Image (cartoon, rainbow, N blue to C red; front, top):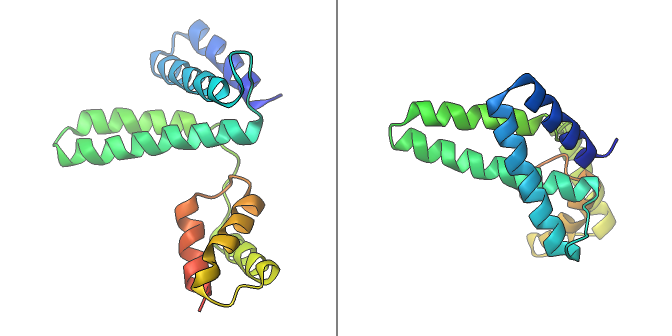
Length: 150
């Protein structure tokens, strides 16, 4: 079952269960997925699972930024609501990579790119991101590449 089909099914289940939080999150996610599909290939476009996962990561990042803002602004009730939404969204992402797996991927990418300095970081990042296939965020990949390149 594709990620989009899974989201549609869970949306229906949330309606039946009258789960207001999950229903709201999934409706926003479905809207974001549709906008991304339209942007990519027009009104009848569709996203594959990797592209859908990127949209989900973007939604999670937006909510993490909101959590920080709410905590700084002294609104813990809104921050906790955003945290709950993050948990709902994270359930649709593929299992993340562990630190040692990221280290191994970066070593492979450096060898593949033949990189010898930080000036070639862009080429290494392109390879690492393709190998990670959305199972790790760009920030952690970038930090590991910087750590390993002389």
